[in-house]
Length: 372
Ligand code: ADP
Image (cartoon, rainbow, N blue to C red; front, side, top):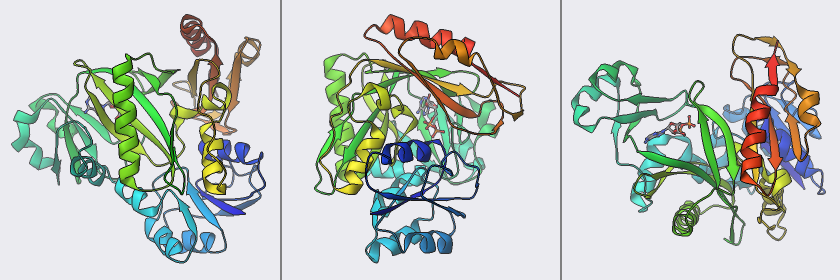
């Protein structure tokens, strides 16, 4: 089977690593020929995943396609789907998710709990919604890694809002942020991974470290699982989805956003679960039985980010020390150049003791530095 992946970043790279367990011919479409996935696929095509003709030409000789990022040309995927190429997830699901305005409206229309919101077309409209603050303004299209998200606490913050169609949503009093990965096959059978719990870095607004399975009261877990399952069934598409949820101070479970693809919050599943999220997506695409999502052991993920003030050829400090730690797994993405805050790799730690996980996670964060 010939399967193409749109995008060749670290998620594409890990998908290709998992593909090596199956008989599948892999194709990558990506603009950067030195991207993390370029040298692990069977066929690399240099090209823009946002361009109709490029995506159509790439996909038309393939059996199936998947994505590692949602900023792709959906029209080309729709045409390919109409011509018989299987697309995971369906282009209709990518269309719903890729624009945060459409995504929020989808939740509201399908009774999926999410924070209260309204839609703004431009920045000047914000002045009419002072009574809605504190709120979070999210640009409809083009935001990534916190860059399209702005917190508006009061009238003084209005100039931080986006001058483009955006969602203005009530600021949630967050107790915990979790992510739950759901896989669904062509028959509509769904599997759930245990949720992961996030801890954020206030400087970069990027994930600091993550623990899995999240420590949650049973009722909250059931609620999160029910919401994530309903959401994916309503999207009505096979594929792999990461549902990011907030648990607020009143233990309400609210959907923040969904990614229609393998996700950073699932890296740990490579070592910590019987079937990884990457393995699961291949099972779905290749039509094999679903895998076992059970954890082998609890785990933590530490992201390896480029150190502040360092740009240029990446140098990994402290790697020997981290590699000598027990039950610690280093993944470097093979990016030649580092930049402040750039995701250069991740480290997974597995242990049956959560204290050991957080202790090692913090230790690794301090030891491992990417400088130039
Ligand atoms: P991105 O797609 O860039 O990751 P998110 O929508 O996930 O953006 O938002 C980034 C972070 O901002 C979230 O992880 C959360 O910490 C915070 N955030 C987002 N929406 C809200 C909200 N409604 N209330 C409070 N905090 C929020």
